[in-house]
Amino acid sequence: MPHTSETRRKQLERHGFVVLHDFAPPPLVAEVSRRVAELFLVEGAAAGAEFKQEVGARRLANVVNKGEIFSRLIAEPSILDLVRHVLSDDMKLSSLNVRMAEPQNQSPQPLHCDMGAVPDARGYWVCNVVWMLDEFTEDNGALRVVPGSHRSGKLPQHALDDVTASHPDEYHITGSAGSVVVMNAHLWHGGLANRTDRPRTALHAFYCRGDKPQQQYQKQLLDAAVQAGFSQAIRQLLALDDPRNDALCADGEQRSGFLA
Image (cartoon, rainbow, N blue to C red; front, side):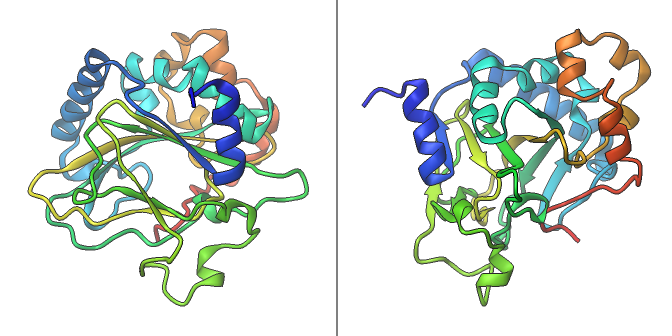
């Protein structure tokens, strides 16, 4: 069956995720990967410190602030169409981070929902877009998901005895570099262990509904000079001129689904 916009939306509704295989062309993947490698080199041990750091993985945070290429990715129209299908037109970017599963890391992520979120009276309010910068395989840290779990209304830690154990219904998402996963982030998910000798890297564009606080308060984190260069559409996507978002993020808290 051809992957039309409608079939992709139906997959999102039923399974909680859809994979866009080979979505990004190789030159774009190479450009993003070069910039990510530069940032890891420059930031060193401090990489990811603006948000959270993770044992067994390297992270970059506040990535919208670190290159024009990233603002292009977060506004990709066909991706945003799917994100809006989950969240409605009232949506914004919540954070943009990079996660590199380190080689020979035998510890999988626990099954989790991003921001510890369950749907509320208005419905779904978190959506994550995973850009594969490396090939995802069964051995290097595939993304495991439990299809349909976004409709359970429960967090995995409240329903399972062990959120790190294999789930009988789990599915492993693999794909070539350039593939993109759009995921209702109420879906139970987590990265598997990387048992290879090479890192596995992905860019995570996390969106939330407009009436919820951003995971990372973009207006506060982004340099003034960077903000000044954004188009009006990007400013709106980042909620830079939204008093409601300012009020929602006033407590200064940075929110994570599972990282302590």
